[in-house]
Amino acid sequence: MAVYLNEQHFVPEDRLKMLFKDMCNVQIATATLVKFCNDLSENLVKFDGAILNKIKLATIKHMDETDFRVAGKTCWLHVASNTEYTYYHYAPKRLSLLEGVKGIIVHDDWKPYLTMEGVEHGMCHAHHLRELNALIEYEKEKWAKKMRRLLLFMNTYRNLYDGKIPTEKIVRLEKIYDDVVDEGLK
Image 1: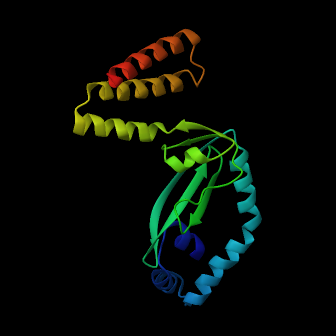
Image 2: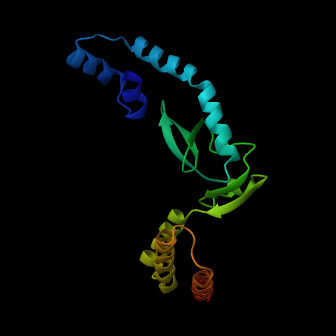
Image 3: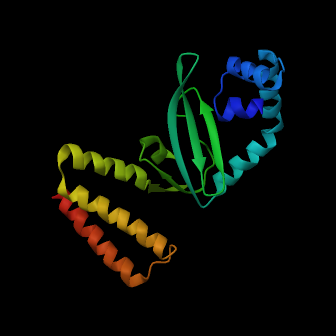
């Protein structure tokens, strides 16, 4: 429970010590909490490697990164996931990309992802929508509003047809998509 609360819910060690004292009448030293976390981490090394391998070889995976602070320094948490697995990779530098990745990676168009060899690229629609929202709000771009509406509609269609949209409907959606892109380019 201590490891779960500390690692998953970010409950600080001092608060964990209070929690165990108040709720279980057990005094736990900070060193004991650290040992619990280290022991579990060691027990998960093989599991961690297996998850990483499954993600690397998955046909489609999403990749992203975010910054956070450790001891006052900016570090990076990279994530690679699919519908079954999630792999987290901590790095002191942002450019610490996974090697040996195959298949399709869906991402936010961060330029270093484009340098990865042996992969195809898909752009993340959540990031597309964020960019479109900015164009709508700040630039008052009418085409962006149309594209946002179209992408959301296409996603609804995908769900409606369980990913198996009839060919004639795909052809029509592609035509609308191309028209909106042309409008945006103009």
